[in-house]
Image (cartoon, rainbow, N blue to C red; front, side, top):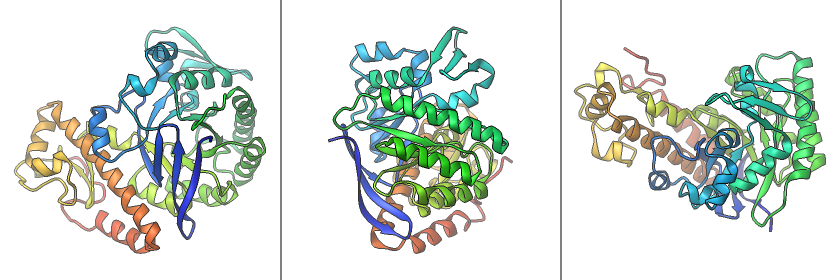
Length: 379
């Protein structure tokens, strides 16, 4: 049986379910830690597993550059290479079409990149992107697309989206069906509802195992992102998993779950951990701040990760200020744990039909503490 999703409960538009893959099942809504180059930065695979994470993300472009997809395949595939036994989703390289615009040229057939590592030229087409993801052994392969930048005029967004739809058809033709593996199409169209509707229609006509919403969280702001989801998600197939790419903060995730999204990934928890920022049940803490220098309290009393269970805010502050590598490791572990606990609580609330109450409690916690405001600034 191919990769598929089965529903378990609904609360309004919010959904709980189970994603079935070649490397096991994953309860949704799910947050996937980002392991761009075959590692979740500052984490061992055992540490990632200890947080409760069951699915991670890798990146076609970065793994193509080093160590190379063919090498990973010869060494047994990405699961064995990075010691990850659960499902892996691989981003197709489409985001890099936008983020590395200064290092690439694009045409109808695909994109030629000049490597940011050594300057070597690499060619990505829909067919090559799908081939790389097959060599890596991804459970979920993503169509190669152009992530439309923001801002973009409606004409620019339309041209970009229609190119991505032609590439989606080529990605589908290149994909080799295997037991427990699947290909996701990516909805584009910027913040323009008619273009989003056109994109959904084009993708559903092709047919995919899952559908992603791309081109958001690229500078449009939360209100525009939610408005785009409001007009897009109801058009997407009910029976397939829905994935919002590159999102986001806990508030972003909660709002997107409300609108029917099932899957998320983002670098925020890992990147924040490396820069001294911690997501907690009482808001975001900046451990660089001097106010934590003599604070013996745990980072988050509601969390059982090693950073919270074994260490004080004062110690974590010391590690960050002293630039000891243990500081980013502990804070990254905590942030991934917080995100996994967040998703677990949201799933349980959907299954109990109590998402509104749970969301209100989360939002009250994020803004409730004068010592831990929603966004604690440097100082």
